[in-house]
Image (cartoon, rainbow, N blue to C red):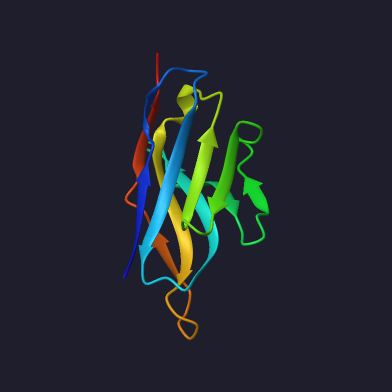
Amino acid sequence: QVQLVESGGGLVQPGGSLRLSCAASGSIFRINDMAWYRQAPGKERELVAVIDTVTSTNYADSVKGRFTISRDNAKKTVYLQMNSLNPEDTAIYHCNMRVWASPLASGLIYWGQGTQVTVSS
């Protein structure tokens, strides 16, 4: 079984910064893409950023230039550095990883439980 645990959310003023972390644990042979999604009240879940195994990254247009995704393979952790936050960034942020439990297993998608980010003065 694989578990993803996020941390780092909270309340921040507009213009502030937060760093989210998501650590994977359990039976893990390999992790492919790692990503962050978010879901604001009344809205659908949206992709925020994704990073692959060669550290190529993609971002939603709304966060380009403000957010940075990174990964530490040794720690099985993905990060999201969020700068210049604005109220529109308020949402529950979920991490997502495609994990292989063994060389012969299929890659499965796992989700974290989510961490609340609130941007308000």
